[in-house]
Image (cartoon, helix red, strand yellow):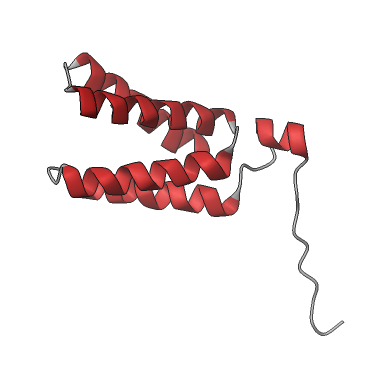
Length: 107
């Protein structure tokens, strides 16, 4: 999930920057690309996921041309912020991977 969302953000940002975007749009695309790179690497995943959610919702409000792709990216970003980076990430290497064990109530 991190790889798909991060790659989509980086590709989308590069396409927008090469098309000659305005300064405000270029700053937003730069932030989205930075969040995408950190998501692919699995670095600061809760912060990057939250940033993706906020930027995608901002894009829905400010540029309503394609709202469903932005809603999708916002949903994925928030889900990643809540789920965490996973076992194969820089965050797991730096801080350790936390696993939640759910015990059976009957035992």
